[in-house]
Length: 309
Image 1 (cartoon, rainbow, N blue to C red):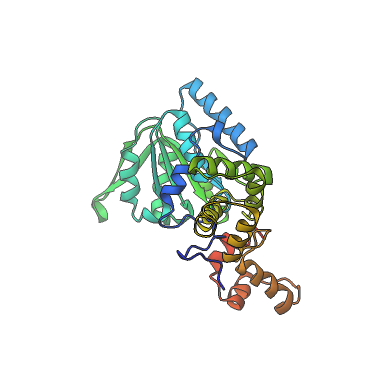
Image 2: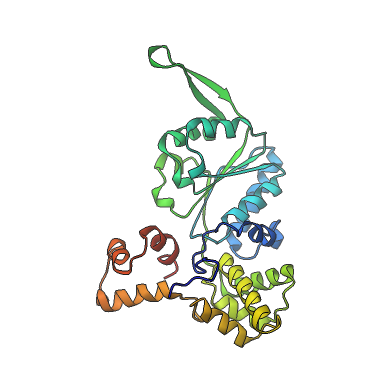
């Protein structure tokens, strides 16, 4: 049995799914004071923002990396709000041609934030447009073809690029080196996830006791998005089975329905562990071999399961 709910969402997969955007936005902290966890990153960003504002300079370009669901997009929105600029959000896969990126950049105003999620998906030609934009606040456009072609440099607004990725290692060195600040988001502490679950329950109007928040947090893989997803499923299960009343038994039953155990391991996690123990006899195994053995995509294993396990 796969670790999915009836709507087809694999709960342990913290990547944002279609149809979850509205819930994700409604639970998203708006300011640093509401943002729980990642304390050192938060403190560093607040200092950088204050210093940039005092100098009346744009914030250094920022690279955020780490497993999905840990708050990279949320931080981008908070940074934009703190700087007082607009936020233009897109993804690396949505920018197909250099002209697409040039259009985005030339429509920015001074102090704006350009947020590119999955920045590792940018094509090489598109990526090269970023180099001069990040360093000189200018882009070079080629006009014409062949021997008559010439380069035209256009000045851009003084903006800040925030790139987010789950795979920092595949970014090219020239792009990675142009970020003034790089932050790795780690899995959250148990107590932080409990606070996040309780905050989300309050926003959604769910009556949840601290001990209930603790049970949900323990099964969340220390990931806010997964915790919020489980909370929503527990609420739905309680409404269907117990007149909306949430108790430890209801939480356990809901987790069982999602094939999630008390430690947050789902059916795929257990498949991987079983494969490593019984098929590979506890010896090292490559991601391709594991992928073939359990019939699961390599990318899913690398981005969703490997970081947590």
